[in-house]
Amino acid sequence: MASQSSKFAVGLFVASGIVIVTLAVIWLGTSRYLQKGLTYVTYFNESVQGLDIDSPVKYRGVSIGRVESIGVAPDSKLIEVVMKMEPGEELQSDMVAQLKSVGITGSMFIELDLKNEDKPDRSPEIMFLSEYPIVPSKPSEIRQLLSYVDDIMAEIKGLDLPGISTKVKSVLGNIDQAVVDADIKSISGGIQSS
Image (tube, rainbow, N blue to C red):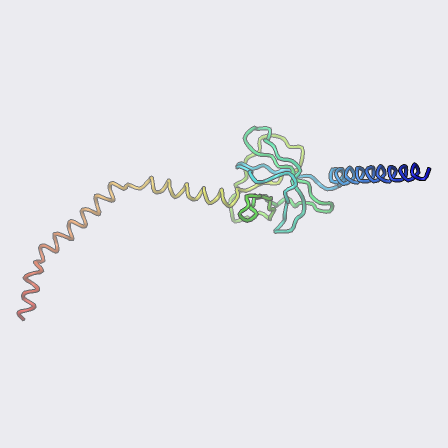
């Protein structure tokens, strides 16, 4: 009889352990969805590869929220990123979002900062209604760098390289003719004799 009661006790202990672990997993999983906090959305006109759900949202390096969802915007051109801020965090109207890279891993996060009034607004134009307040975005630093390279290449393509080459050849020809006309051998011979 003692063995039957000990088997029952062990079974009860294991079953209660499984129930407690299951309830803990459910509670931890749903607590994130039930968490209070304001929700915002931003739209990017570039690839968000490396940005994942639960990626951090930071304000000047301090984590203040998480990415809740990523999808294609209603216009089918922009990428919609929904952000959930931690309780007590409310974004100002003069904030701007930018994609930032975490080292060389390829992981991305969203960096929030105040708008610089001296720089032009480069956020994409939103032509549809949004469920959440919109935080304007600006191109990532990599995208800005590639844009500058494109501008430089356009300037190089705009140069008249054949015309420049012709002028350089003409100038070098004139210099060569001036050296020949100077008759350096006779001048150096005259210097040696004097």
